[in-house]
Length: 176
Image 1: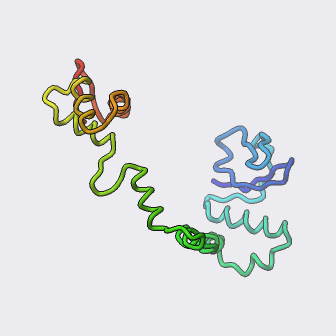
Image 2 (image 1 turned 30 degrees about the vertical axis):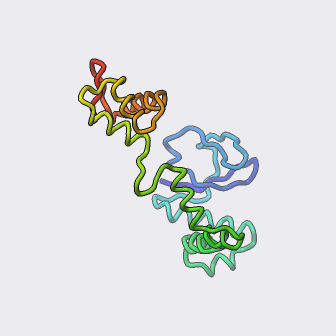
Image 3 (image 1 turned 135 degrees about the horizontal axis):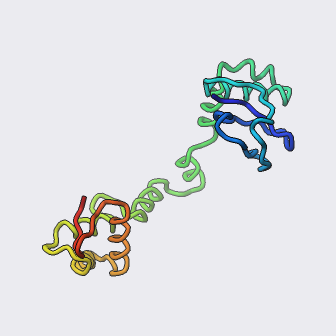
């Protein structure tokens, strides 16, 4: 269930998802905490889209824009119009005299991407799979052969084990 509710402090209206399940709700604009049972409900529906549409209609009426709102078929038209408004990143960069392709390539390099490069995490994971005795020392040494600093390789090993991508038992690692 969805309800369109309003704040008695700042007059903000927002969607509250299933007001029966929580005792309080915070206003997204001013932050005031309200008891959900005491919030004024302008509209209730099982359908989220219907509640969104009702909120949009209430906001339009509040701003004396009901006629303009009535011309729209659905709120999703507004979302599409916002997505289509303005210029995209490429147009902006080129209008500013910046080569958009060069920016994209720099981004790929900065993230460690590219067709011939592997991330540090991939190198450490591969080291676990390829060394004969995958202890921390051996894995870190193999990763070091590929340019990974010792401490970074240790941190990556710990992180991979914590995330469940590697297991460590008896001082030896294996890829899961």
